[in-house]
Length: 606
Image 1 (cartoon, rainbow, N blue to C red):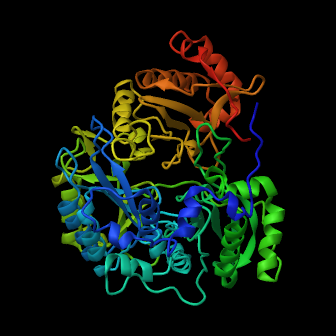
Image 2: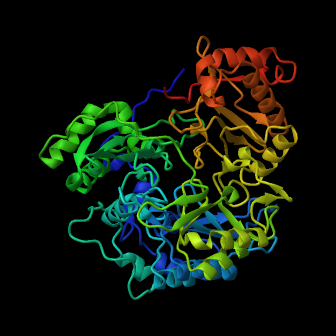
Image 3: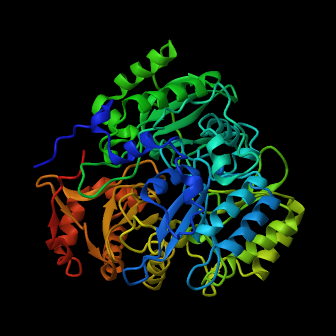
């Protein structure tokens, strides 16, 4: 029997969960005793401090690969970078040096990690490194504030937007991030820095004493003007509908003066709880001058209404699922004092783009270069070469700013066209564009993974370490040139957004993964578990790791034999339907045994 979906909106104090009580009992909802706890000489943090530290971008982790009762406590630190940058050459060299000094994994090679929200993470940091890192970052104009916690997170924007003559989504990401930035006073006191990020103005968002119910994620889509033809091209490289709030520019008469807002997206789920991954729904149209005011009201309504008893139902998508978009729009209008225009159902927000390789900059004659970084891990000594040295040398030589992309790659800006051949020669000299001496395949370029084990406390299994080897196996089978998308995450929080890809693999246990299908290569569709509609039985919820290459080969073979001309794998699946896929896999001699195990759908909210 399904558990009734009954989030507790406007949760009374007596029903608050322990995380909410912790915020309420602290002298400040994200300060508490952190100043003392970060300096107590112990390797870890008390639970109360650990929760508050997240708003400062500090996560307590431990080495999941280490055996025994005693934990090797480590920290992940997340730097909030609205729109992914631009990160100046000097700032990049600071990041590179800090990682050399303070990130110490067991194999001894430091790294930086780009994320799917355009943040940068330090992994394997010891407690004594936290304060020096924050002080050095602040001195270079960077911050970990809003890196995690119950606040507005890093605002996403197209990495090319800062060099657009049509729409600078990066500028808007900076404005929105500034509006929702947490007050800097506690940050300055905790880390004893002269001044943190710019102080919030009187018009900035007013966080309550308990901050938000849960995180709010905001992302913008993009429009480009083709340098060759002048045509306007929509671009959803951020997969903006996976955010709590998405913002799409509306182009009229060659300029952007309005936005269509979407609400209620989110990919995170919880095993054993009635939860769901969904794309945001159209909310309404606002003028450019109204955008910040409307976003403020939207987050304020969530702050007031969102569930504070059940954290798995505390995201905005559950308020909207329960109450509906019209109800939400009315509550927002009450705060604004004016009605929001209805959405345009025909607005095209574009397909997902990766921005790899050479890109024209429409606002000048320079070029950008999108560098493929497998799973965002910038590190030397990998099977893809000495990536960390490569990036550092290119940034230093060409004095180019860089931008982290939503695909966990790196975009080099403002490269003179006359130096293109020189830049390419340096890429070749420094070993770029190959894995084990072979060029990156198309399938590898369109595949990705979250961090997973050994540093994520939420992860059940490997993802970043598994995905490259999975692609290796598929390449050996002959599928390297397949034009499709594949993503792997270590748990159902789905940080890498696997369910928007044609193939989504989600950790469900140690060396076990769930398959999600019905996502598409352009990022326009939400993938789903493999559930037979007539029986509501769920298949392929716990696939052994060693069986995945064979399962995918069978799916790929079926696609190649039955597709229509020009049809991609994701759209092929959507055309034939899940029942046909289940029937085929159940009858196939290599996958039939896998299909005998089925699961309940009680924790799936439709």
